[in-house]
Length: 123
Image 1 (tube, helix red, strand yellow):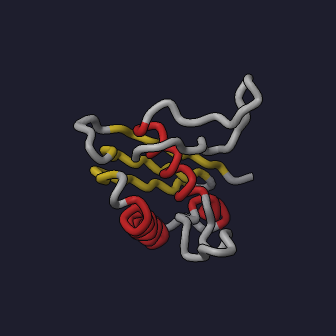
Image 2 (cartoon, rainbow, N blue to C red):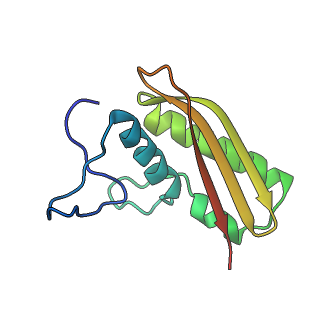
């Protein structure tokens, strides 16, 4: 976790330079967002990378899809970010056109739990 990292989403600061995360915990949060919002196959040189959350709004809501989505997200977090965080809880709710995902995690080396929530509505 040492060193400088670019923020996600990438942005330019008021001084004209790229913005870096303020802390290691913010960097981990940015990495989770990047992983879950990237569709598998989207990255040319790393096709398996991604959680595919954005695609869920186009799928019919069902208990089976909810279970598969939870398994897919757990697998992606474990494969790509296992060295950066510990997942303490994951909830996936598919309600009609609304996808609601809550990840409770603890950054590596930290005693503090954090929560990140994604909510997407199709239209």
